Amino acid sequence: MGRMQVRLAFGDGDGGGDGDVDGGGGDRASSLYRWLIADGELRGRAEVSLAAAVPGRGHMGGAQDVIEVVLANTIALGNLLVAVATWRGSRPRAPQVRVERDGVTVTVEDGSAETVERVLRALGAGDDHRDTE
Image 1 (cartoon, rainbow, N blue to C red):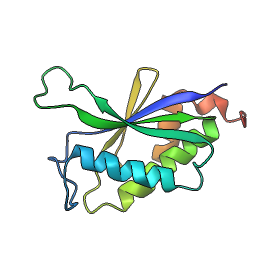
Image 2: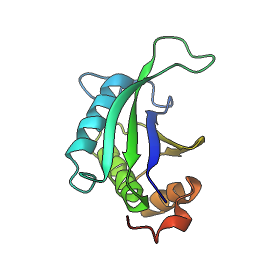
Image 3: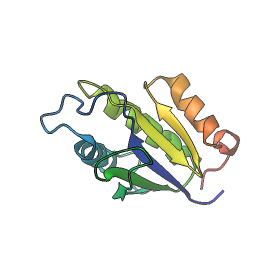
């Protein structure tokens, strides 16, 4: 398996802010972005960047920031999911994070090992654990 691209965005279920002083979705994206680029397990295995997402049909307002991640392999995807779960655990009000790969979207609502495995399976990475590129 070669490189994989994953997109991270935020769920709408928490009413906007997550308890941060600065609040909204763009600020959450910036916070998670900074968390991911500082993560030692992802360094050298992932390219992380901020991007603007066009609002979906029925959504009012401007574009929200999303995080684009290009990963070297499935192990890096697991590391990404653990980093997202850890970041969520550090928030006063943990926002839902949507993870998308190849048109499949999974919402991360907690940081349990079961959730990480569920997301890996849903994103089609469950059969690729032998890949260690």
